[in-house]
Image: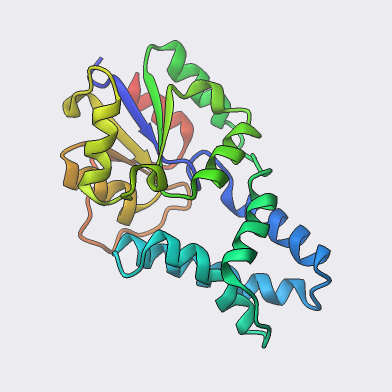
Length: 228
């Protein structure tokens, strides 16, 4: 077996973040009697994605992201809120959302049966990611889930992968594979850390960057074929 340790990104790779976010935002805004739920979501979602990209590039801190995103979102509609307080309210909703993509559980079960050691490697808020995993059907397949907030560094920083390696018994970079959907976080991070990468690209997005994955696949079945 060329690889032994599999580092899986969670959101957009195994966990269905769009479904989780859609459900959580809708429930929260409806409970608040917000006048135009769909308009808020249309503004908030791309704005939030942009903040996470800024975090990858170290333009802001995780705490600044968490504390500001809802303040920015509601301010767009002329409403002033306490961003940190609203973040905690949202956390209660999103942490209950454990939706995974069809086939994700079967993929992990097959890889576990084949003898791979499976770990999570995610940029995210600890309470949210732990809650979502607890409400998912895939948590039992992971030996450990490494969350950027806990490690105090995030993908693509090589330090993230160094800290992960220190926590995995017998870890060797040449036996490790980083699997994820994000070129800028998962693939760039793996490259910088000297770890082989799989770009999971089911939408067949064009790679217009300088970041080159070791492998590219568009389905879980191709991940299985690669690892067999």
